[in-house]
Image (cartoon, rainbow, N blue to C red; front, side):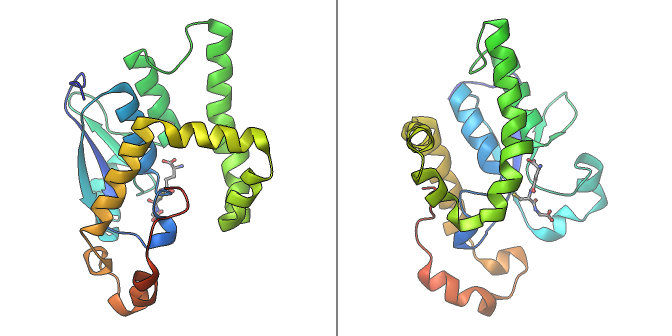
Amino acid sequence: MTAAPAPITITAFKWVPAFARGQVRDFRLRWMLKEVGWDYQVELIDGDTLATDAYRAEHPFGQVPLLREEGRPALFETGGIVLDIAERSGRLLPEDEDERALAKCWTYAALNSVEPFLFEVAADHNKLVEAHDNLAAWRDRCFARPAYKEAIAEQYAEYDRSGPKDMGWDEDEFAQQKETQGKGETK
Ligand SMILES: N[C@@H](CCC(=O)N[C@@H](CS)C(=O)NCC(=O)O)C(=O)O
């Protein structure tokens, strides 16, 4: 890790059930920040915090993640944030103007044209990826990146230190899931 231009904090949930691990979108910022080598802190929050006026003043939809960086407005929406980090760090976006334009198109496509439909197939999206060699190869390239591995390990480790009570949720409701809790599909 190297120093970011200014101290950075991202927000993330204290705990989520097994099926959501690796899917909560603070993961994208962890991965991106590790790719560019910028240090950051994580502020772990619960659902109540999302609903506060102070949080909503920074995030119009009251969601995680937020990226706070000293001297700048708090940023929300992971797609916009990763493009901002890429541009400012000079990492990951291609130098070539046309390639760069395509990379931006694919970023929007991922969020706008692909992600909504992946939610429709929910847990089966891994099967979908497996059925296409090019998608499986792309996924495996992502999984092999050191920054990806570090980011996923960090997010899981934080969840392991907490439980549903830390989110203000009923322990019993999640007891069954907790027993079977293991490594999520994306790990
Ligand atoms: N499009 C947003 C989605 C953010 C989002 O859906 N966050 C979820 C967690 S992955 C959340 O905070 N959900 C709680 C809520 O909406 O109340 C982004 O990419 O930043």
